Amino acid sequence: MDKELGKQIIALRQSIVANFNAGHWEEVGLLSGHSETIDNHPRLLRSLSWGDEDYAGNVLAVLRQIAEEDPKAFHVIEQFVQQKFPGDSEYISAKPAERRITFAPSVFSVPDMPLETDLVVVMMPFSAEFAPVYAAIGNACKTADLRCLRVDDIWEDSIIIQDIFSLIFRAHIVVVDFTGKNPNVMYETGIAHTLGKHVVPISQSLSDVPFDLTHHRILKYLPNSQGLTALQTALTTARNFKKSNFHPFPAASVYPIH
Image 1 (cartoon, rainbow, N blue to C red):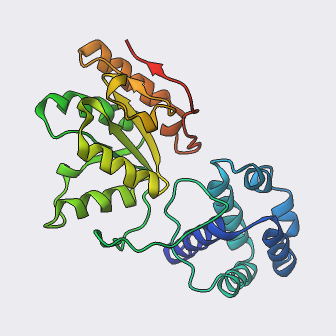
Image 2 (cartoon, rainbow, N blue to C red):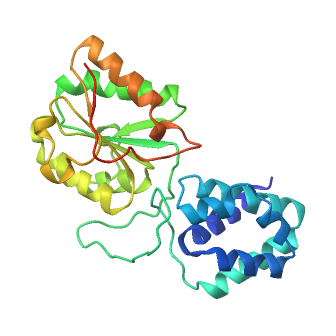
Image 3 (cartoon, one colour):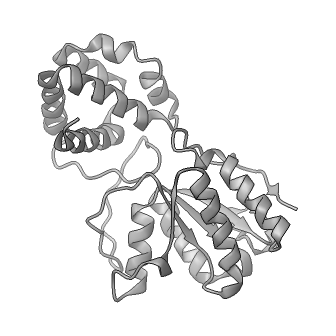
């Protein structure tokens, strides 16, 4: 497929995920002549209706099929979206939402960077004792065919908080380590939640987890060889770390790793 067409499909997918309801799909089906393609897809409308995590992937699959089979129909859909949602902004959250808001942060600059669906960002205290933990997370990412970065892996801006915001903005998954109740990690977790990222919380002690977040599932680990191996395995097998099925952990449960 032509690279530019690929970019068009991805951009159109972002706008559709952010704005479309079932009625919009019915309209573009009629206008493009591809009602059957849309209606007969086994997951598209169902995943939209249920708010499932695979909706964005299903949108991409349908758009790609139409673009490859009928370029004119694809352009009809593009025009429909541009007219229906003029000035639409990029969608960078990890899952579709019923309501979308626009905000302008005063402390950060919004980076001119796309969402990277294979990027996992790790937020943890900057201390040598956490190096083995970061290595375990990195190994889990490699196993799942994902990339792993921490803010000290890059140096793009003179203001460190801008690098942190940019990393979280680009990421699909953010792993946060609450061990030691580090205030920076708490702040970064708030940024990740606000941007709608998949946040995977881990900690050596459940008492370090803020009360407001105790209803989320926490991966508790021990900082020894056996515990880090168990953490790596738990992350590798978690649904968050499967690119084809980015589901959040269920609420109100704890997953201890001994």
